[in-house]
Image 1 (cartoon, rainbow, N blue to C red):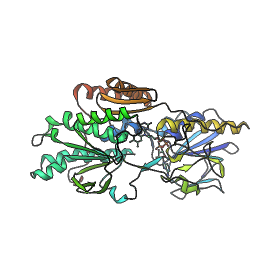
Image 2 (spheres, rainbow, N blue to C red; image 1 turned 30 degrees about the vertical axis):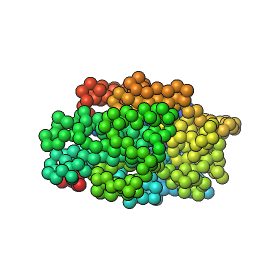
Image 3 (cartoon, helix red, strand yellow; image 1 turned 180 degrees about the vertical axis):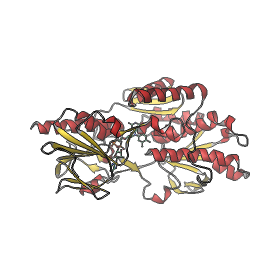
Image 4 (tube, helix red, strand yellow; image 1 turned 60 degrees about the horizontal axis):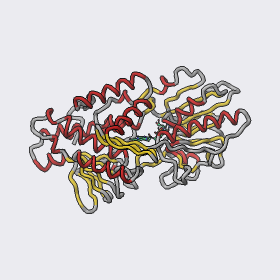
Amino acid sequence: MTTASAGSHRVVIVGAGFGGLETAHRLAGAPVEITLIDRRNHHLFQPLLYQVATASLATSEIAWPIRYLLRGRQEVTTLFATVSGVDPAGKRVLLEDGGALPYDTLVLATGARHAYFGHDEWEPFAPGLKTLEDATTIRRRILVAFERAEREPDAERRAARLTFVIIGAGPTGVELAGTIAELAHDTLPSDFRNIDTRKTRVVLIEAGTRVLAGFADDLSAYAQRSLESMGVEVLLGQPVTECNRDGVVYGGNRLAAKTIIWAAGVRASPAAEWLDAPADRAGRLQVLPDLSVPGHPDIFAIGDTVVIAGPDGNPVPGIAPAAKQQGRYVADCIKARLRGAALGPFHYKHAGSLAQIGKRQAVIDFGRFKLRGTLAWWIWGVAHIYFLIGVRNRLAVAMSWLWNYVRDQRSARLITQGSSKVGR
Ligand SMILES: Cc1cc2nc3c(=O)[nH]c(=O)nc-3n(C[C@H](O)[C@H](O)[C@H](O)COP(=O)(O)OP(=O)(O)OC[C@H]3O[C@@H](n4cnc5c(N)ncnc54)[C@H](O)[C@@H]3O)c2cc1C
């Protein structure tokens, strides 16, 4: 299979997430033919995935067809396919369906997935949040739990259906816990007749000693107080040792819960395995300072699938701005090489960290400048709307948030399967 015209420099980018898409955008105008491969047909704005999982936003508000995003770029071919390996000697990308694609320069931007620290058997009971399917699965489980509780005569079983456990108190865990608490306490009470959804338990379990460990201590403490004031039970220093269909076990305690969500760990895509390249314990490929793969100067790897030290010596965080900066750098590197020049090493610039806790509460950590509360929440909202793609989605998300802000209503409360199919 060949998509590039003969003679031009063929760049193959695997993954149209934040890193891969940025590489393609930045290569505009360069003398290259680009093939962008993704196993999904859409680019996903993962920072707002938890809002789909908690029925606040619809799937189409945070995802865009990749083909549409690049429709004006004649030199870019978009392929909907799954990459299964790389043949560096033959300079070919190998596809799961048996196809192969030649490259002159390859950019691997295949991201990461959630990981269960060696307990993959927990996944069916405690789904993680990474894709649109994950988000709609979690949304279905949350909404079905309330539906089943409404018809449950046994008090103990009803309580288990109305107990939601979130494992991992990073930004995703905190955002999920806060939003589920709001859903139960503010949005749903008037919809049900046999249950009081305000009695729902939302339990956030964290193995470490504080929530939002990547933020400053005082912001962590504020986030914990805010969650507790919203009715979330925060359990710190409690590694979960078991997840099953009836609930979780932590520190020797058994907690009955029908809905468990995993927000605790990630593992890189198998890019390092494809190339037999060095990787850290999370499977992240250890790239060189110019983001190329050791021993393969024509292969770059970027974003969540790699590890590289930042200016403070700590690994560059697995966040969208880091993937985008790396995507821009690699595109500049390719352009420089085509001119016969070379770029200096990649330098990461950390702009800051933001997390939403509840409807009017967020924390912002820009290093020397820190903010919390309602103003932080407004800045968080404006920043996320700004980074969404397209006017229609910005307006749609702003409207959904405004409606929720004013009326406590979440418009995406849809179970898209019949009652006999949803199980449990
Ligand atoms: C729930 C959640 C919330 C987050 N919140 C924030 C936040 O608030 N702020 C922030 O900055 N960051 C946040 N992040 C992290 C951020 O989304 C990632 O750091 C960023 O997406 C990494 O970009 P990437 O390009 O490396 O990978 P991704 O954006 O994950 O893109 C990888 C792409 O590769 C494709 N792919 C993977 N394997 C293959 C294959 N074998 N063949 C073909 N295609 C493949 C995937 O389909 C995907 O499109 C969040 C992440 C999650 C999961």
